[in-house]
Image (cartoon, rainbow, N blue to C red; front, side, top):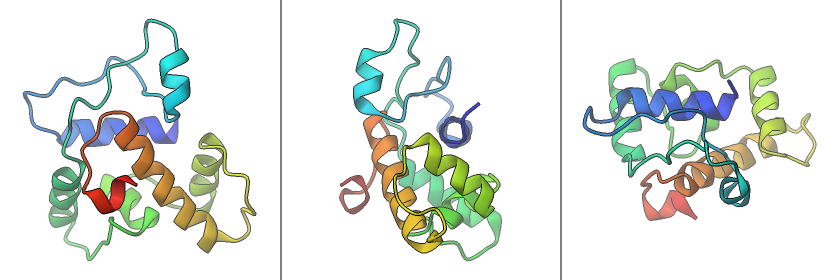
Length: 130
């Protein structure tokens, strides 16, 4: 499973029980999602990403700022947030910048993950969905 797919599955695992889980891994690229085969998984089905993430942070007992930090987002989801893992996520999401500039890469990653979640049907606050 891709790292982005893992992120989505972790969000679904904490979403309200009446929301259906995806059949398979979502596509992080909206254009690719439209061009994908008929077995493309269902989108996030209006999962309130902020509510789920706020709940996860609360349960973690840590001070995590998932709204601005990809590391904190991954930690809240219980996903390996190591530099190597973030570099793998950057490759998945087609990062073209310098992977040795982790600060720039992290900012880009956070924005891309939030946009991909929104593109796959996740509900985000306006300041994170753009």
